[in-house]
Image (cartoon, rainbow, N blue to C red):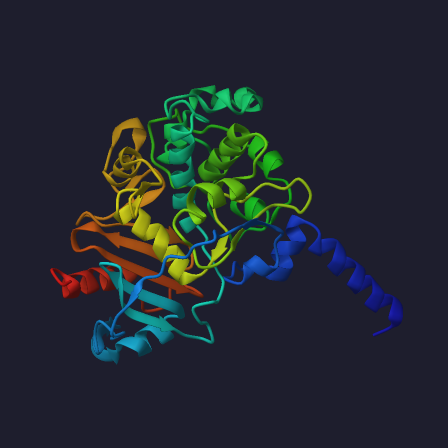
Length: 374
């Protein structure tokens, strides 16, 4: 390999690394370590820390029955976690850690990218912004805050439409196409420009369609409402500090200078701090006597509602389960699972879902195991 050829390759690498396509080529596919490759805004913890009680730390099951290719086999529970690429698994009931396990060289201080669990956190902030009077109503057209989107026909889209994924915005959720919209907002360096290209494909309020584009528009709206404060600063002030997070965190953004948070994804934090977000909703927004998020907003987020084109299993950026449980979920199998009836939280973080996993079924089994326990 001659010197000029090598220099050319290096030049192409650096050119690619500075743009969306380069990021896609170099880093594809999304990874739980992506907090290392994107610029970010810091989310500062407060001066006091809340700690869960330590329990006996016993796995909920010794073994699980797995069916693969028509055959049933018994697999040790922790082997199941490891084979399915888990890096952290917590079971917490009544503020006591019943089980805590870290794998693949991760530990309780390891940072893990949230991916779409961040959508549920953004919903929390919409709730606090309503309380603070920064947003008047979820029935408002989004162009009250983003007038530049009137030309896209978005004056028909309300904040509620974005929250419930019924905006009618045309958005391709595929991450495998480097020229697709999902890759563009994940790897791209200008979220405002990407949002300005979006168009309507359906009448708002008529169709449910899961779309990271909806959440990113919602993030731009919150950013506009905050004016002189970043979304990360607002998260720190309204939630991260009041509920006693153990660690600082961060929120990845599109570019270093004048960048904005990728609100459809990309909060970078630790397992126990993710669990505290679940505890906050488990207690209807109340944190040890302080109403951090209004109980009305929490209830509105976890009760099924099919109006405005929504679906019965998704509300205000939360996934709802048939048994009254609900969850924040991320693309690689990240979960904050909340079961109010049994005061139970489950946190599962992983490198991916795993080939033989059914996490919702596992959560249901664990919920049954801990039902009525203290």
